[in-house]
Image (tube, rainbow, N blue to C red; front, side, top):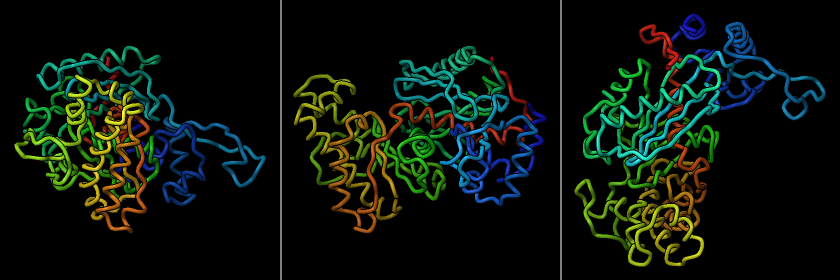
Length: 404
Protein backbone atom coordinates (compact mmCIF):
# COMPACT_ATOMS: atom_id res chain seq x y z
CA UNK A 1 0.00 0.00 0.00
CA UNK A 2 2.81 2.45 0.82
CA UNK A 3 4.31 2.02 -2.65
CA UNK A 4 0.97 2.76 -4.29
CA UNK A 5 0.37 5.94 -2.30
CA UNK A 6 3.99 7.05 -2.74
CA UNK A 7 3.75 6.69 -6.51
CA UNK A 8 0.44 8.54 -6.88
CA UNK A 9 0.62 11.11 -4.10
CA UNK A 10 4.28 11.86 -3.55
CA UNK A 11 4.14 15.39 -5.01
CA UNK A 12 2.91 17.98 -2.45
CA UNK A 13 -0.03 20.16 -3.39
CA UNK A 14 -3.24 19.69 -5.37
CA UNK A 15 -1.99 17.33 -8.10
CA UNK A 16 -4.39 16.04 -10.75
CA UNK A 17 -4.43 12.62 -9.05
CA UNK A 18 -5.32 14.13 -5.68
CA UNK A 19 -8.08 16.27 -7.15
CA UNK A 20 -9.59 13.24 -8.85
CA UNK A 21 -9.38 11.12 -5.69
CA UNK A 22 -11.13 13.90 -3.76
CA UNK A 23 -13.98 13.96 -6.28
CA UNK A 24 -14.41 10.19 -6.22
CA UNK A 25 -14.98 10.17 -2.45
CA UNK A 26 -18.67 9.97 -1.72
CA UNK A 27 -19.54 9.16 -5.34
CA UNK A 28 -20.45 5.76 -6.71
CA UNK A 29 -19.04 6.40 -10.17
CA UNK A 30 -17.94 9.45 -12.14
CA UNK A 31 -17.12 9.67 -15.82
CA UNK A 32 -14.04 11.37 -17.20
CA UNK A 33 -16.23 14.18 -18.55
CA UNK A 34 -17.68 14.74 -15.07
CA UNK A 35 -14.18 14.80 -13.57
CA UNK A 36 -13.10 17.43 -16.11
CA UNK A 37 -16.11 19.57 -15.20
CA UNK A 38 -15.68 19.20 -11.43
CA UNK A 39 -11.90 19.63 -11.20
CA UNK A 40 -11.38 22.22 -13.93
CA UNK A 41 -8.49 20.12 -15.25
CA UNK A 42 -7.80 19.71 -18.94
CA UNK A 43 -8.83 16.56 -20.77
CA UNK A 44 -5.20 15.49 -21.13
CA UNK A 45 -4.50 16.03 -17.41
CA UNK A 46 -7.51 13.96 -16.41
CA UNK A 47 -6.61 11.24 -18.91
CA UNK A 48 -3.05 11.00 -17.63
CA UNK A 49 -4.00 11.02 -13.95
CA UNK A 50 -6.78 8.47 -14.46
CA UNK A 51 -4.35 6.18 -16.27
CA UNK A 52 -1.95 6.45 -13.33
CA UNK A 53 -4.70 5.73 -10.80
CA UNK A 54 -5.99 2.76 -12.80
CA UNK A 55 -2.51 1.23 -13.02
CA UNK A 56 -1.98 1.78 -9.29
CA UNK A 57 -5.10 -0.19 -8.41
CA UNK A 58 -6.65 2.69 -6.44
CA UNK A 59 -9.35 3.29 -9.07
CA UNK A 60 -11.44 0.88 -11.15
CA UNK A 61 -13.37 1.43 -14.36
CA UNK A 62 -16.96 0.34 -14.97
CA UNK A 63 -19.57 0.66 -17.69
CA UNK A 64 -22.44 2.95 -16.71
CA UNK A 65 -25.71 3.79 -18.44
CA UNK A 66 -25.34 6.05 -21.44
CA UNK A 67 -27.63 8.84 -22.57
CA UNK A 68 -28.25 10.79 -19.36
CA UNK A 69 -24.56 11.30 -18.55
CA UNK A 70 -23.09 11.40 -22.02
CA UNK A 71 -23.90 13.57 -25.01
CA UNK A 72 -23.66 10.59 -27.32
CA UNK A 73 -26.74 8.45 -26.58
CA UNK A 74 -26.33 4.73 -27.00
CA UNK A 75 -22.57 4.61 -26.51
CA UNK A 76 -21.15 2.96 -23.37
CA UNK A 77 -19.68 5.35 -20.83
CA UNK A 78 -16.72 4.51 -18.59
CA UNK A 79 -17.37 5.34 -14.94
CA UNK A 80 -14.60 5.48 -12.36
CA UNK A 81 -14.70 4.61 -8.66
CA UNK A 82 -12.30 3.99 -5.81
CA UNK A 83 -11.39 0.36 -5.18
CA UNK A 84 -11.11 -1.54 -1.93
CA UNK A 85 -7.33 -1.32 -2.26
CA UNK A 86 -7.59 2.38 -1.46
CA UNK A 87 -7.99 1.45 2.20
CA UNK A 88 -10.22 2.41 5.13
CA UNK A 89 -10.79 5.39 7.40
CA UNK A 90 -12.25 5.36 10.91
CA UNK A 91 -13.91 8.10 12.93
CA UNK A 92 -14.92 8.83 16.51
CA UNK A 93 -17.28 11.66 17.41
CA UNK A 94 -17.78 12.68 21.04
CA UNK A 95 -20.82 14.45 22.41
CA UNK A 96 -21.18 15.46 26.01
CA UNK A 97 -22.79 12.13 26.90
CA UNK A 98 -22.24 9.85 23.91
CA UNK A 99 -19.61 8.50 21.55
CA UNK A 100 -20.12 7.46 17.92
CA UNK A 101 -17.64 5.32 16.00
CA UNK A 102 -17.71 4.49 12.29
CA UNK A 103 -15.51 2.85 9.66
CA UNK A 104 -15.75 3.57 5.93
CA UNK A 105 -13.82 3.00 2.74
CA UNK A 106 -12.33 6.00 0.97
CA UNK A 107 -15.42 6.37 -1.19
CA UNK A 108 -17.17 7.13 2.15
CA UNK A 109 -19.30 4.01 2.07
CA UNK A 110 -19.94 3.34 5.77
CA UNK A 111 -19.14 -0.28 6.59
CA UNK A 112 -19.95 -0.27 10.30
CA UNK A 113 -21.14 2.32 12.83
CA UNK A 114 -22.07 2.35 16.49
CA UNK A 115 -23.25 4.94 19.03
CA UNK A 116 -23.16 4.39 22.78
CA UNK A 117 -23.87 6.43 25.91
CA UNK A 118 -20.67 7.68 27.53
CA UNK A 119 -19.91 10.34 30.14
CA UNK A 120 -17.46 12.15 27.89
CA UNK A 121 -17.52 15.31 30.01
CA UNK A 122 -16.60 13.24 33.05
CA UNK A 123 -13.12 12.24 31.96
CA UNK A 124 -10.84 12.48 28.94
CA UNK A 125 -8.66 9.46 29.65
CA UNK A 126 -11.60 7.08 30.06
CA UNK A 127 -13.21 8.48 26.89
CA UNK A 128 -10.06 7.98 24.83
CA UNK A 129 -9.64 4.44 26.14
CA UNK A 130 -13.23 3.74 25.12
CA UNK A 131 -12.60 5.28 21.69
CA UNK A 132 -9.54 3.13 21.10
CA UNK A 133 -11.39 -0.02 22.12
CA UNK A 134 -14.45 0.79 19.99
CA UNK A 135 -12.40 1.65 16.91
CA UNK A 136 -10.44 -1.60 17.18
CA UNK A 137 -13.69 -3.52 17.71
CA UNK A 138 -15.33 -1.82 14.71
CA UNK A 139 -12.42 -2.77 12.47
CA UNK A 140 -12.89 -6.45 13.30
CA UNK A 141 -16.47 -6.20 11.97
CA UNK A 142 -15.48 -4.96 8.50
CA UNK A 143 -16.27 -7.76 6.00
CA UNK A 144 -12.90 -7.58 4.24
CA UNK A 145 -10.22 -6.07 6.53
CA UNK A 146 -7.97 -3.61 4.74
CA UNK A 147 -5.30 -1.04 5.58
CA UNK A 148 -6.48 1.87 7.73
CA UNK A 149 -4.93 5.09 6.50
CA UNK A 150 -6.36 7.73 8.86
CA UNK A 151 -8.79 8.45 11.71
CA UNK A 152 -11.07 11.46 12.18
CA UNK A 153 -12.13 12.85 15.57
CA UNK A 154 -14.91 15.29 16.44
CA UNK A 155 -15.43 17.17 19.71
CA UNK A 156 -18.12 19.63 20.88
CA UNK A 157 -15.42 22.19 21.64
CA UNK A 158 -13.23 24.70 19.80
CA UNK A 159 -9.82 23.33 18.81
CA UNK A 160 -6.82 25.65 18.67
CA UNK A 161 -5.11 25.55 15.30
CA UNK A 162 -1.59 25.98 16.69
CA UNK A 163 -1.38 22.71 18.63
CA UNK A 164 -4.80 21.02 18.28
CA UNK A 165 -5.53 21.57 21.96
CA UNK A 166 -9.04 21.90 23.37
CA UNK A 167 -10.01 25.41 24.45
CA UNK A 168 -10.55 25.67 28.20
CA UNK A 169 -14.03 26.56 29.43
CA UNK A 170 -15.71 24.64 26.64
CA UNK A 171 -18.62 22.24 27.01
CA UNK A 172 -15.97 19.65 28.00
CA UNK A 173 -14.20 21.48 30.86
CA UNK A 174 -12.18 18.42 31.88
CA UNK A 175 -10.58 18.39 28.44
CA UNK A 176 -9.32 21.98 28.45
CA UNK A 177 -5.71 22.32 27.31
CA UNK A 178 -5.41 18.65 26.32
CA UNK A 179 -4.41 17.37 22.88
CA UNK A 180 -6.73 14.40 22.35
CA UNK A 181 -5.81 13.87 18.69
CA UNK A 182 -2.16 13.36 19.63
CA UNK A 183 -3.15 11.01 22.46
CA UNK A 184 -5.37 8.88 20.21
CA UNK A 185 -2.64 8.93 17.56
CA UNK A 186 -0.24 7.42 20.07
CA UNK A 187 -2.78 4.79 21.11
CA UNK A 188 -3.61 3.65 17.57
CA UNK A 189 -0.38 4.36 15.72
CA UNK A 190 -2.39 6.14 13.03
CA UNK A 191 -2.76 9.75 11.85
CA UNK A 192 -5.73 11.47 13.55
CA UNK A 193 -7.46 14.55 12.11
CA UNK A 194 -9.45 16.53 14.71
CA UNK A 195 -12.05 19.27 14.38
CA UNK A 196 -15.03 20.61 16.26
CA UNK A 197 -18.40 18.99 15.68
CA UNK A 198 -20.00 21.99 13.95
CA UNK A 199 -17.22 22.19 11.36
CA UNK A 200 -17.56 18.46 10.73
CA UNK A 201 -21.34 18.70 10.44
CA UNK A 202 -20.95 21.49 7.88
CA UNK A 203 -18.46 19.43 5.91
CA UNK A 204 -20.79 16.42 5.85
CA UNK A 205 -23.89 18.38 4.80
CA UNK A 206 -21.94 20.02 1.95
CA UNK A 207 -20.38 16.79 0.68
CA UNK A 208 -23.21 14.33 1.34
CA UNK A 209 -26.29 16.08 2.67
CA UNK A 210 -28.75 18.96 2.49
CA UNK A 211 -26.56 21.47 0.64
CA UNK A 212 -24.43 19.21 -1.48
CA UNK A 213 -22.15 21.19 -3.74
CA UNK A 214 -22.85 24.60 -2.15
CA UNK A 215 -19.74 26.71 -1.63
CA UNK A 216 -20.90 29.23 0.99
CA UNK A 217 -22.77 27.60 3.87
CA UNK A 218 -23.56 28.39 7.50
CA UNK A 219 -24.26 25.20 9.46
CA UNK A 220 -25.89 25.62 12.87
CA UNK A 221 -25.24 22.84 15.37
CA UNK A 222 -27.94 23.39 18.01
CA UNK A 223 -27.50 20.94 20.86
CA UNK A 224 -26.51 21.43 24.51
CA UNK A 225 -24.42 24.26 23.09
CA UNK A 226 -24.69 26.23 19.86
CA UNK A 227 -21.91 26.44 17.32
CA UNK A 228 -21.61 27.35 13.66
CA UNK A 229 -19.65 25.53 11.00
CA UNK A 230 -18.60 27.88 8.21
CA UNK A 231 -17.94 26.82 4.62
CA UNK A 232 -16.59 29.78 2.66
CA UNK A 233 -15.76 29.42 -1.02
CA UNK A 234 -15.90 25.64 -0.66
CA UNK A 235 -13.53 25.37 2.31
CA UNK A 236 -14.03 25.05 6.05
CA UNK A 237 -13.24 28.40 7.65
CA UNK A 238 -11.69 28.05 11.12
CA UNK A 239 -10.30 31.54 11.62
CA UNK A 240 -6.81 32.63 12.63
CA UNK A 241 -6.68 30.42 15.73
CA UNK A 242 -9.26 27.73 14.94
CA UNK A 243 -12.19 29.02 16.97
CA UNK A 244 -14.38 30.68 14.32
CA UNK A 245 -18.08 29.90 14.65
CA UNK A 246 -18.43 30.10 18.45
CA UNK A 247 -21.74 31.95 18.22
CA UNK A 248 -23.30 30.37 21.31
CA UNK A 249 -21.70 32.99 23.55
CA UNK A 250 -22.92 36.07 21.69
CA UNK A 251 -25.26 38.04 24.02
CA UNK A 252 -28.82 38.30 22.74
CA UNK A 253 -31.23 41.02 23.84
CA UNK A 254 -34.93 41.51 23.27
CA UNK A 255 -35.86 37.83 23.18
CA UNK A 256 -37.92 36.19 25.91
CA UNK A 257 -35.86 33.59 27.75
CA UNK A 258 -33.97 32.60 30.85
CA UNK A 259 -31.79 35.03 32.73
CA UNK A 260 -29.41 32.38 34.08
CA UNK A 261 -25.70 32.82 33.61
CA UNK A 262 -23.98 30.97 30.81
CA UNK A 263 -21.19 28.51 31.53
CA UNK A 264 -18.83 31.12 30.07
CA UNK A 265 -19.92 33.54 32.83
CA UNK A 266 -21.89 35.82 30.53
CA UNK A 267 -25.60 36.68 30.70
CA UNK A 268 -28.17 36.12 27.94
CA UNK A 269 -25.72 34.22 25.75
CA UNK A 270 -27.46 32.69 22.76
CA UNK A 271 -27.11 29.14 24.07
CA UNK A 272 -28.89 30.02 27.33
CA UNK A 273 -31.92 31.02 25.23
CA UNK A 274 -31.96 28.68 22.24
CA UNK A 275 -29.94 25.52 22.87
CA UNK A 276 -31.71 22.18 23.21
CA UNK A 277 -31.05 22.39 26.96
CA UNK A 278 -32.66 25.84 27.17
CA UNK A 279 -35.71 24.73 25.18
CA UNK A 280 -36.23 21.67 27.37
CA UNK A 281 -35.90 23.79 30.52
CA UNK A 282 -38.46 26.29 29.21
CA UNK A 283 -40.95 23.46 28.63
CA UNK A 284 -40.35 21.68 31.95
CA UNK A 285 -43.10 23.53 33.90
CA UNK A 286 -45.68 22.33 31.36
CA UNK A 287 -44.38 18.86 30.46
CA UNK A 288 -41.88 17.84 33.12
CA UNK A 289 -38.54 16.37 32.19
CA UNK A 290 -38.36 15.80 28.44
CA UNK A 291 -35.94 13.99 26.18
CA UNK A 292 -35.11 15.50 22.80
CA UNK A 293 -37.02 12.74 20.98
CA UNK A 294 -40.17 13.51 22.99
CA UNK A 295 -39.75 17.21 22.22
CA UNK A 296 -39.76 16.45 18.50
CA UNK A 297 -42.96 14.41 18.85
CA UNK A 298 -44.71 17.18 20.83
CA UNK A 299 -43.73 19.80 18.25
CA UNK A 300 -46.28 18.31 15.90
CA UNK A 301 -49.23 18.59 18.30
CA UNK A 302 -48.56 21.11 21.08
CA UNK A 303 -48.86 24.87 20.37
CA UNK A 304 -46.75 25.81 23.40
CA UNK A 305 -43.91 23.61 22.14
CA UNK A 306 -44.06 25.20 18.71
CA UNK A 307 -44.06 28.67 20.31
CA UNK A 308 -40.96 27.91 22.40
CA UNK A 309 -39.19 26.46 19.35
CA UNK A 310 -40.15 29.51 17.29
CA UNK A 311 -38.74 31.78 20.02
CA UNK A 312 -35.53 29.77 19.92
CA UNK A 313 -35.40 30.27 16.16
CA UNK A 314 -35.91 34.02 16.60
CA UNK A 315 -33.01 34.16 19.06
CA UNK A 316 -30.76 32.25 16.69
CA UNK A 317 -31.86 34.47 13.81
CA UNK A 318 -30.97 37.61 15.73
CA UNK A 319 -27.35 36.44 15.60
CA UNK A 320 -27.47 34.78 12.18
CA UNK A 321 -28.90 37.94 10.59
CA UNK A 322 -25.67 39.78 11.34
CA UNK A 323 -23.65 36.83 10.06
CA UNK A 324 -25.66 36.81 6.84
CA UNK A 325 -24.73 40.46 6.25
CA UNK A 326 -21.08 39.71 6.94
CA UNK A 327 -20.60 36.34 5.25
CA UNK A 328 -23.42 36.26 2.66
CA UNK A 329 -24.04 32.48 2.76
CA UNK A 330 -26.12 30.78 0.07
CA UNK A 331 -27.55 28.22 2.51
CA UNK A 332 -28.14 28.07 6.26
CA UNK A 333 -28.51 24.52 7.57
CA UNK A 334 -30.08 23.65 10.92
CA UNK A 335 -28.33 20.67 12.53
CA UNK A 336 -28.49 18.95 15.91
CA UNK A 337 -31.54 17.53 17.71
CA UNK A 338 -33.77 20.50 16.88
CA UNK A 339 -33.39 19.75 13.15
CA UNK A 340 -35.99 17.03 13.67
CA UNK A 341 -38.46 19.80 14.64
CA UNK A 342 -37.12 22.26 12.08
CA UNK A 343 -40.40 23.86 10.97
CA UNK A 344 -41.02 26.27 13.88
CA UNK A 345 -37.30 26.85 14.49
CA UNK A 346 -36.66 27.84 10.88
CA UNK A 347 -39.83 29.97 10.83
CA UNK A 348 -38.54 31.98 13.80
CA UNK A 349 -35.08 32.14 12.27
CA UNK A 350 -36.50 33.46 8.98
CA UNK A 351 -38.50 36.11 10.85
CA UNK A 352 -35.39 37.48 12.55
CA UNK A 353 -33.30 37.09 9.41
CA UNK A 354 -35.75 39.16 7.37
CA UNK A 355 -35.72 41.84 10.05
CA UNK A 356 -31.95 42.07 10.58
CA UNK A 357 -30.28 41.08 7.31
CA UNK A 358 -29.96 43.30 4.29
CA UNK A 359 -32.53 42.22 1.68
CA UNK A 360 -29.85 41.27 -0.82
CA UNK A 361 -28.31 38.90 1.74
CA UNK A 362 -31.42 37.66 3.56
CA UNK A 363 -33.81 37.14 0.66
CA UNK A 364 -31.42 34.95 -1.31
CA UNK A 365 -30.35 32.60 1.49
CA UNK A 366 -32.05 29.20 1.74
CA UNK A 367 -32.94 27.83 5.19
CA UNK A 368 -32.98 24.04 5.31
CA UNK A 369 -32.93 21.31 7.96
CA UNK A 370 -29.90 19.08 7.93
CA UNK A 371 -30.36 15.84 5.98
CA UNK A 372 -27.90 13.74 7.99
CA UNK A 373 -29.35 14.17 11.47
CA UNK A 374 -27.23 13.06 14.40
CA UNK A 375 -24.85 11.28 12.00
CA UNK A 376 -23.57 14.53 10.49
CA UNK A 377 -20.56 15.02 12.75
CA UNK A 378 -19.30 11.44 12.61
CA UNK A 379 -19.72 11.44 8.82
CA UNK A 380 -17.79 14.70 8.75
CA UNK A 381 -15.04 13.05 10.78
CA UNK A 382 -14.87 10.25 8.19
CA UNK A 383 -14.60 12.86 5.43
CA UNK A 384 -11.88 14.69 7.36
CA UNK A 385 -9.94 11.45 7.74
CA UNK A 386 -10.34 10.64 4.05
CA UNK A 387 -9.21 14.14 3.07
CA UNK A 388 -6.11 13.77 5.24
CA UNK A 389 -5.30 10.30 3.90
CA UNK A 390 -3.50 11.68 0.84
CA UNK A 391 -0.90 13.24 3.15
CA UNK A 392 -0.27 10.11 5.23
CA UNK A 393 2.92 9.20 3.44
CA UNK A 394 4.02 12.77 2.79
CA UNK A 395 4.48 13.26 6.54
CA UNK A 396 7.19 11.01 7.78
CA UNK A 397 6.69 8.10 5.39
CA UNK A 398 4.49 6.21 7.87
CA UNK A 399 2.99 2.95 6.65
CA UNK A 400 -0.75 2.34 6.99
CA UNK A 401 -1.76 -0.22 9.65
CA UNK A 402 -4.40 -2.92 9.55
CA UNK A 403 -5.81 -1.47 12.78
CA UNK A 404 -6.67 -4.82 14.33
